[in-house]
Length: 252
Image 1 (cartoon, rainbow, N blue to C red):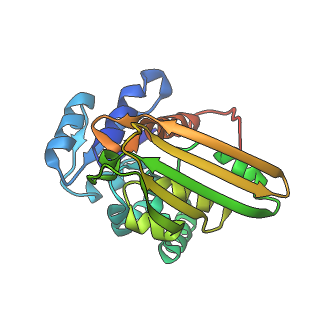
Image 2 (image 1 turned 45 degrees about the vertical axis):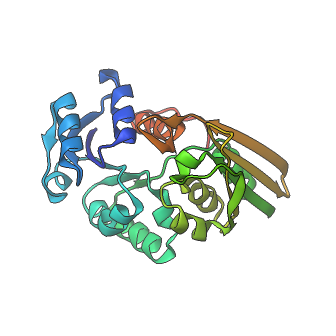
């Protein structure tokens, strides 16, 4: 499988470092507005540096997007006209108009869209539970001021509302809210707390429905190079990438 990478920051570096020759995944093309970052990955993989997106689209099986919601909205539709897409900026898909256009274009061109589970556990169970009735589904996210990109010495709730609002207000922090919402096709309730006493990105999910009830707590190690992102997000993409070449799959 030949892969083009868009967004050559911390997540892309972790993913590439974990892929081995036996996985049959070749990272070939690299594009980033920050040319220096793209050059670093190009040298690491003996790949090809792209000055624009079109240079890779006709020669890859899949494009890995690890850039931003803004970039995905701008180029996602064009990508799926030519190749499969794995998107890390899943918050962009909370925009219903964009999501429908992306999915329809993918269908028309016989390509696929893959959104890894990201920085939260329990997505498989949630998807199964949502086949029945869900009466309540909430996400409480607790992060350090550094992770949220603010300065404060107080623990306080910064946001309380719907996931669709949270991903706009915190585009680099709330992809988890989008993952959960899209998994169960509902705009879930979200609370964002800044807490100077924590050094992890903590996501607590509480679901109640006809299946019963579950709670999960994920205490994520932030990526040192980008504390707004959890390492688990990159690891979930690695797992998904490797699964595309497998014939045996466990989980939903």
